[in-house]
Image (tube, rainbow, N blue to C red; front, top):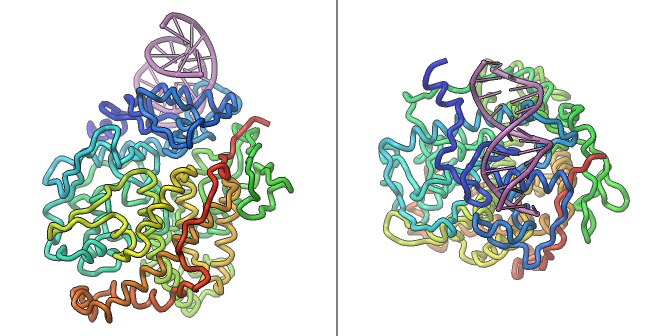
Length: 542
DNA sequence: GGTCAAGGCCAA
DNA sequence: TTGGCCTTGACC
């Protein structure tokens, strides 16, 4: 093992801050880089099945000095940041490796790469003054497989050598640099700027779109092609094996509990409202009692092991999508597709359906992405674009559609207060991808059902779904707003290069596909959602 | 045998 | 109840 490899594999948490309270990180604990005190707090809470009640509004500030004040909000923040109750052992067995070992290793390697690449030729694109307690960049970077960037960045950086600044001239250029939209823009196809300021590689956009956490480009910086740190051992990816055995419909067959976790069951899913959807594993009272019914879609299985978690991430849809353009794999794909006629026509139809989905959903995914980042506090309130103007983050999120900026901000606040976490974010993304308006496609309808069922295993609130639908309608309206510019603001429209730009084609197509907001469903008010509708599933020993 | 993320212990 | 330190044990 080389020195560099040793550096990659050896933990170095010096200077790292706990994403929950900001104290010094002592290592990976229950899926997250945290301090010793949050580790102990989380362990006690889960082991002793503690139920906390916030005396305020469930949005208490948590930092090193006041973390003892509100255990309810502290625990909620632990969960939101990504600590995993499943990692607390039901049998209390000491020692041994935990179930996320390979995650930790991979995450460490990613972090080392980021740290290594932070040094050369980067300049701040926007210097944002922030205090430790006012960080709109919450340190979700500590979370294994999370989809955010770096906590320690006081400035937001970009690689000066990569940015084609000539394309950053108007407010709409700011839109075009937002993640989803820009992935379709040929002019910016080499590098894409995330709202947080990071440039991501073009090929990552599909992974981002599909919500694969381990492949999320926000986990990675863009590296010069010539620069490569030694990777942690990569498992060879067998396309055929993954497609056949880990297809979307077969996830539930993969995630089988192991003995360590077999005794852990989600005992209570307390809610004052009905479950999100009727689940076959739910009782009439809404309590989920069947731990063997694992998530078919989301990494929410009640008994994840290192092996099964690895399966999920290594066999991700993103990996499958990456292999699709490879002609040498195409025959295997065709023969491996269950129930799919193995001929070129079937494949063409499949691709056509995928394009339909992407064209319909990209704006929703874009808004969902920014919503989650806002919930985590990762985004500054405004962005300065190249011409010196400040635009609000809502302006960027809604593609310039000012109508619902305030509504979006309120929805974001509500989600934050409801404890919106990465699982909900993941569900939102899948629901966005499998757009309701495409439910005439059988696979979409089926996929939506699986997502909803998986989600219902960890959430018992219709409130989240209501807000998602609001976001989706806002996305539709924003696309139509963009499209309307060709008649209302021809000057700006022309700057978007409408005759040759691929993004214009996407806007045009999606504007024609997304259903108009009906008068009866026009978004005028944020729905009233009570915070008490959310209670996390608590894993308990049976 | 070293590593490190689990659980346990115990003073504050 | 908290949080710092210790012990344990699977994995490398």
